[in-house]
Structures are given as structure tokens and as C-alpha cells.
Length: 311
Ligand code: PMT
Picture 1: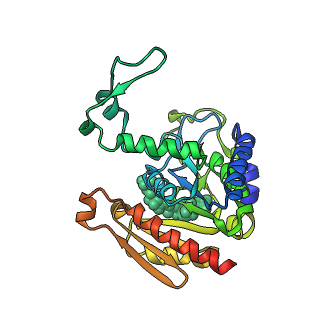
Picture 2 (picture 1 turned 90 degrees about the horizontal axis):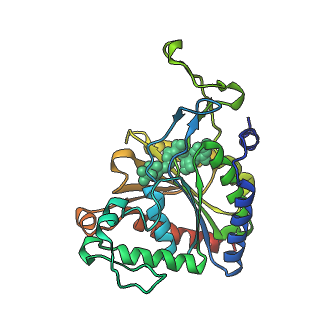
Picture 3 (picture 1 turned 120 degrees about the vertical axis):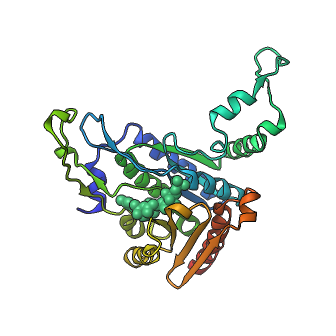
């Protein structure tokens, strides 16, 4: 089944048409300012096993790669369309889980009526004020738009709509596909209508393969764009070959290869004719530097060269 047919097979998520309009307006506005725009996909998709789902197949991805990368792209001047799994890591907020600020922030009691005033010991929330400022600057400048997905169906529809929104930007658009997207699903027509009963004994499920969305993305949805996919493996011995294989099949620009256990400090950027290792030293880790800062810096330069070559 072609990937595009698959998108039609999945139920359209509520609000998808409105989101398509919002994304198109966002991209067109930034495009008219001559700004580059990146779609960052982040977090894992969830696949229902029943028509009225009680159980799901889920994914380990925390969304931290996507959230940290979105911050780095904003700092580099990109407009960022952040397509992320609901309740996964969110840019500028993910370093501050509720339990840190719930106890550190106190109502100060000095606010005039109608205003809320909060205060905290600087050292109890290091970086909090700067993160708040950065987020609100991006919001005020209209350079950041967050769109949520939960299921595989949500993701597929919203990815297609996002690609259509960014396509008019040509080579100024970048796709940074860090989301971990399910490779398997149960078609709606084959799902049990009601909750699967444990009284039926051990469960056997046959799932269909989800075609890679990279194929229509590269060929039809945004053929002029700069496209980066990710390849995650648990076995270091196969990851580079798997990444190269993806590059050969889809013929997009970059694959970022990473291994589950070392993904926070080591990635390999693979193109048709290069292989670049990025590594964080222990000293850099201690200073709080994140691998995404190096990754985005490198990819931004490659994007500049890509735009130059296209013109
Ligand atoms: O979120 P974190 O905890 O920080 O972890 C980050 C990460 C490990 C999830 C991230 O760095 C990463 O590697 N993401 C991709 C995981 C992966 O290997 O996915 P995949 O093999 O299912 O897909 C490979 C590529 O094809 C991905 O870019 C994906 O967006 C794309 N894809 C996947 C499935 C599908 N049907 N269509 C696709 O286009």
C-alpha cells in the first residue's frame, strides 16, 4: 500500500483541518520574512490495539532530543514547527518538571490586585528565568508553533499537513524527523470492536507494516526541502549500515545515526559522501552542554550549503 493511501485509511484526527490552516499560515508568514523554517518531529507514536482502545503499543522516546533541538534551532534564527507527542518533553520546560517549581516558586504577596507575583531563590531554579524569557520571546516573535500528536494516525495526518505547509518555502524548509514512529499497526478494519478479553487465553496479534513516510515526503510532499531522518539502533555494529541503507533508499540529504544507550553524548551525521562523528567530552557534559547544540550547529551549515547549491 502506498504511504499516501495509508494516510487516507487512518481516521482524520479531530482538529486536523484547522491545524493544517494554522501551520500553513505560520509557514507562509515566516517565509515572507525570508526566514528558514524547520519541522521538528519529537517523541513516540502510540498505536491502538482495539477500536475503542483500552490497550496500546507505545514507544520509549522521551522527546528530549526534539525539545532540545527546537531550542537550538530557535537560537539559530529558524522558525520552528514543533510536532510532538502530547506530554513528552517540551522546549524550555523539560528541564523543570512540576515538582521543581511547585516547591521553589512562592507567591510573593506584593502583587497589585489582578496580578500574580511569584518569587524563588535564584539557586533553587537555575536557568528558569532565562528559559521563560526565551520561550516568551519566540512566542512574541511568532517563530514557534507547537502541534500535538498522540496516535500514529494523528502523526501521519499532521506530518502530511506540515509538509504541505512548508513545501512553498522550497529549499529554505528543513525537516528534522526525530520522532520515533511505529513500524507496525492494526488496520481499523481488523481491530476487535471491544476490549480484548484475557479469558480468551494468550494473545496473538498480527500487525501490518507502516510504510515509511520519508518516501512521499522526499518525492511528493516537499521535494525541494532539506530532509534529515534519524536511525536508532541498540546494536552499534549495524547502525551505520542501516543509516546508509535509508539514505540510499529515500535519497534525502542526511541521516543522524544514534545508539540507544549513548544517544545523549554521541551521534554520527551521515550524508551521501561523508560521515561525521559528534561527541560530548566529560567536561562538556559537566558544563551542561547538550549534543543537540553541536548537531543543530552542524546541520545549519549543511542547510546553508544546500540552499546555495540549489540557487
Ligand atoms: O526522544 P529521545 O528519548 O530524546 O530519543 C531520541 C531518539 C532516539 C528517538 C531519536 O534520536 C531517534 O533516533 N529517532 C528515530 C528513531 C528511529 O529509528 O525510528 P525509525 O527507524 O522508526 O525511523 C527512521 C526514520 O524514518 C525516522 O526519522 C522517522 O521519523 C522516519 N519514519 C519512521 C516510520 C515511518 N512510518 N515513516 C517515517 O518516515
